[in-house]
Length: 63
Image 1 (cartoon, rainbow, N blue to C red):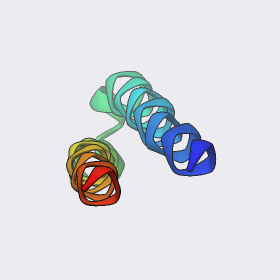
Image 2: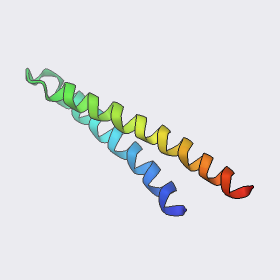
Image 3: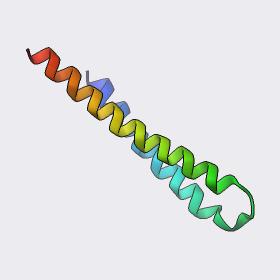
Image 4: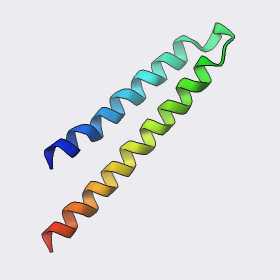
């Protein structure tokens, strides 16, 4: 169960990495920054989804 909690925060790390990449490549004139922002949003979504799923799983095991 601790492994799921660890991977939950890996998504936050990747979101920060993609946000940094989007900011750095903003003035390049390519679509790279938009793609990085999409991946950052996806990583944030996965973080909150995994957090909610883990909480539901723990609550189900308590009963």
